[in-house]
Amino acid sequence: MIKNALSLRAGIDIGGTGTRIIILDGGQEVASETVPSAWFATLPLALRARALVDKINHLVPAGKTLVSLGIGASGPVNNATEIIENNDTLACFSYYPLVAQLRELLGVPVAIDNDAVVAALGEYHLGVGRGSERMMMVTLGTGIGVALLDKGQPFRTFDGKHPEAGHIPVSSDPVTCYCGLQGCWEMQASRTQLQQTLQKEAPDLRWDANTASVLGEMVATRPRIAAIMHHYGQVVGRGLNTLLALYGPDVTVLSGSAAALLPLYQTGLETILAHRASGYAINRNITCSTLGDAAGALGAAILPTLRGSGPH
Ligand SMILES: [Zn+2]
Image (cartoon, rainbow, N blue to C red; front, side):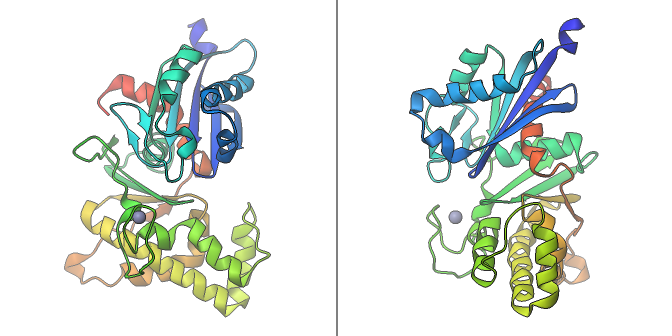
């Protein structure tokens, strides 16, 4: 029992932009740090796992012991080999035995999954998805991540992978996505894409905790900004429409830094989702993440416990 009181769980959310590390004591977050993911790319390959371990150990309070580590990584993760397979947006941690090295260096159980999956697990167990029968989570960030949980169990492809639903083509845009297809949802509706479009109209707009209120004032007074947000809602809606019709979730959770802007593009979103005859209506119970940017790291932290208690 004393050991449990001193035992901590670590979670890491490795995104295309930032790597967030959190330490949980029981269910409480006691420490966290976010490092630009690009920083790891400046280190020799052989030192990257060690650099992560140093960051984790630095966050562990004196007298406490780490008992497990969970990781959520952006893009494809091979669940059989535990290797990240994402040379496109996470090359610095791809195609090398990161998990095996972390296990050896830390001496504790280490589990890994796709970042959208761990964020969904975080919301399902600790956030707005509690009690959901079939939860869909859509993360609008550097790219678009989608995860579906059926009674808490992640939906997988036949070969055990996480479906990369950000790459559903939603437009006839001839620009080729890095995945090789054209017109991908992610190329239209990621936060990155919104940011680039807004940058042209409002070069001074900063992307921080105040973005929603600053942008809200702009939407109220500048028709071109309002039009950009309306259009953004429509392109988010095109992908959502497909996924809602296919999966039929009872709750859809939006996360990522564009989720907080939902009130500014909700009208555009609803124009796309509302055009259904009653017999073909889709469940439009769409809500924002309550764990925010921490969902991924929190879900990652509980991942080893979940793996130990049932199928995944
Ligand atoms: Zn694509």
